[in-house]
Image (cartoon, rainbow, N blue to C red; front, side):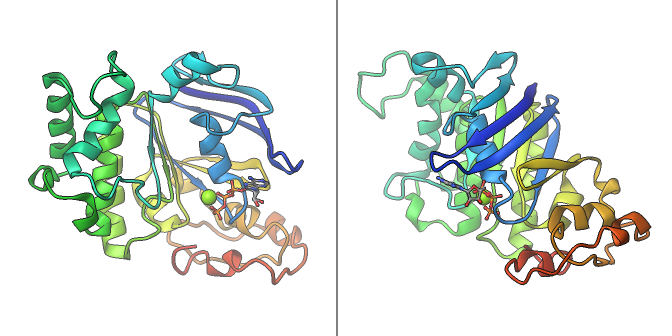
Length: 285
Ligand SMILES: Nc1ncnc2c1ncn2[C@@H]1O[C@H](COP(=O)(O)OP(=O)(O)OP(=O)(O)O)[C@@H](O)[C@H]1O
Ligand SMILES: [Mg+2]
């Protein structure tokens, strides 16, 4: 289980990117994080994997707090967090197999020995991870010879090879075409559910979030403005998420209920700086 209580994050320049975020994600639950550019989505994921240290609050993975952890204790928790990046972060000149095996590095006791000498168990885990994303046939390919969709599947396999207790993905399909995006998110959600771990996926594509995820957490200006099932993603919620400083608009989405009078009354002002709000509902954000 992943539990966040009253998480606040302040960057060194004093900018408060997360104000007060509380979320609990159960094992096997797949939640999409949606929100405008700059809402704090990546900051949230980076706090969960310990790349950023929250200024306040607690973040527990299976009961172990990451906010107060340092040194070896922090590294031990980090090995349990599988992270999938928009730009894959594969080592391009290494084979697919060695990229996936690198997910096992955190489990090795013999950190001083040859980097790519892995025991039989590690290799079996890597093979199985590649099988689960249908990439075993590419095991000996160099990573730089793969297509974008294949690279992202390999990075999912690498995360699985970690035997993660949490899976985090930051815009994992933002570099892929719509058809491939659907396939890769479908694969990611399937393996995350099979793995039975809490999974958070930052997504600009609301349609994909609704189609594949169990739950939607919407963030605006560093706070959670909606946390619930995809069916609750009404026009009011979308306006609160994407147009909190602009005029109200109907997204006319399949999943969206009638426009709420309250939201209409909450219309504030138009702000031409943010392109995201105009794009929501039509395509990826
Ligand atoms: N290192 C940093 N120092 C100061 N401010 C930062 C830093 N990194 C991010 N920010 C600010 O924190 C806010 C949240 O950034 P974050 O990257 O979490 O947004 P995001 O929701 O992931 O956006 P996007 O959808 O564009 O990826 C933004 O206003 C951003 O400018
Ligand atoms: Mg981001």
